[in-house]
Image 1 (cartoon, rainbow, N blue to C red):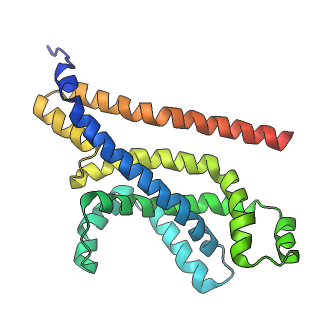
Image 2: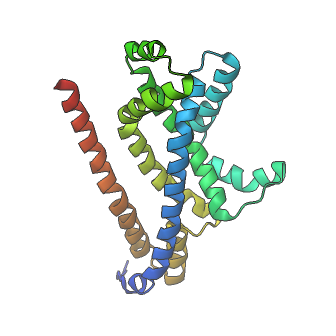
Length: 223
């Protein structure tokens, strides 16, 4: 096979990849905001002592954790408008699909953090006459967030990678622009290699930060 690789066409059209990268960053950042904020609220519902609150929350978590992300994306784009007559632009729809998925995984991370909080601190909240809102905001959330932070960041990296799935429903993210560029140039090796390196350049520093946070937490526990 006489194939001569050339990255010239890819670099000449690199601005298209940057446009797709901007969409990917929008999807990732917005989905992480949804996952971090509402994931904590979902975790509180999932550990509620009331079954009517706890069971639906747990069912939500298990549904999103046990079904493929690709299927969820397709369902939101094609089934949500049919069933609920809801029509959104592609990017907001992608944010909704990815954000709701991330909520489920972050809820589990928060749940572990909440359950790791010493019982004595919860008893102190009662002694100080803190209401549930004050207890959750000032006592539970800061500690649960700190404990769950490495997992939250890891989940954030996963959603960055999974955001490429929206390309299948024609959202013009990095993967979609890369697919168009590979088709137009007949250079799939060069195009997808550059796309992979862009994803790697974004995810690798974040992964290193997770390792640093975990080492710091271990030193704190052993000090």
